[in-house]
Length: 144
Image (cartoon, rainbow, N blue to C red; front, side):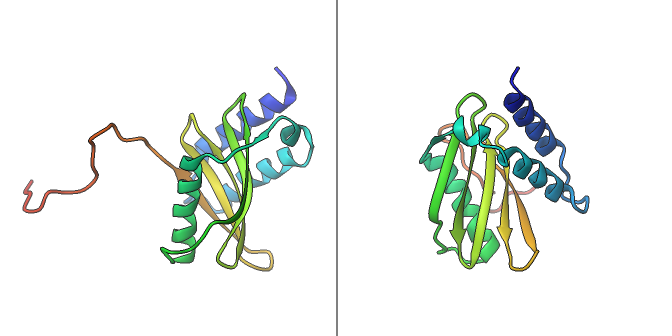
């Protein structure tokens, strides 16, 4: 197995076990992603993508971060590493530059919003596909 695939699998495992309640947990995972991206190997093995589902997830995270339901995801540059179905890239939302990665199979990833100076705000991205006809919510008047 190539060192790139090994590094991507290690990143995926780190993301899976990251715990937001543990101080610095997401920062360590993102540092691992940055280390992976420091070489040109990941970029060379990735192709541009415009996946609408990933774009929707990124928009939802941007809305939450900015507390603005109308915020735009601007200048999105998204790449896909097809062998692992890892999406990665960057964009702007509000006043923040954002870097992200997302594993489709695991339905999770991480977005880092540069909040000025050395501050970074991290958001775990998670998703689950609902079966056709499913809905989320509660029936009014429901009693348990």
